[in-house]
Length: 96
Image (cartoon, rainbow, N blue to C red; front, side, top):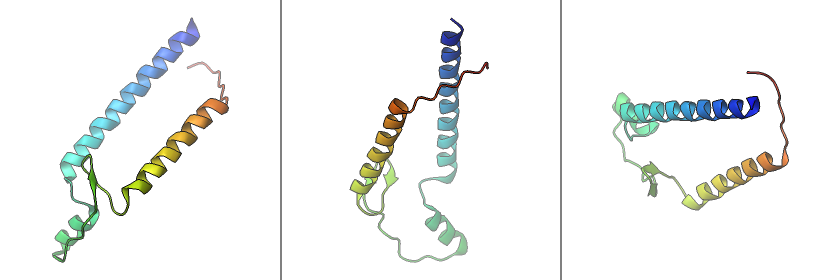
């Protein structure tokens, strides 16, 4: 019973932290806008050169280069995370 209650608390804390970071990320995006660091830096210095083409845009994110490499890297990270979760048994029993 105690273990089940601790699991519920952990899930609630995780979801709460995820929501906090999501809100902070949205606030940071709203404050900084969709310009990258290069555009903000050049505008601050008064250097108005040619704007570079960032490539494709996916869900509001501008990707430089081939978007396939981003998908492959994301898939590898997700696979490594899933495999480590399945095969590495981390059993930490300590009271909260």
